[in-house]
Length: 168
Image 1 (cartoon, rainbow, N blue to C red):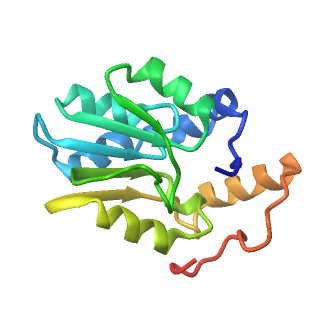
Image 2: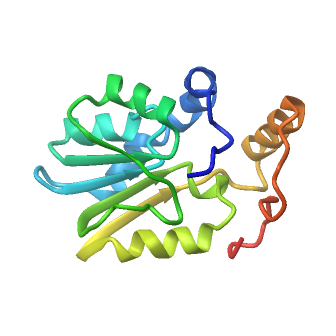
């Protein structure tokens, strides 16, 4: 698994962008409308905010993230979730079906959003539900993100450039 842009930066993420993404957790779960006992996959769990909220709603939660340090934070925030190191679009080792899948502020960070979405849909149970939140490219949060990436000195690998095209 290749190191991602958040490798070794979980605490910095928790103190910054995770706070913005946390505002979307309840609306995301409200859209999914999970029932107690539903199996929920939290893709790109980060600090585990979605996983923790889904556990409070009575879901059986599997939370995945490609970054071990993010999973360490998720373990603190959602200790009853099953945590797995995996990333989109592959989600190696993850098998469904899941009643519900949540991806909070994840697709907008990926080089292959279309393939990632297809993979998540393939993990859904019949009548399963998928909820995704993203930062709109036309609004200030995306520009803030672009500014932070530029100022950090991060190098964007070839083929991973941002695009306003939904196919990546």
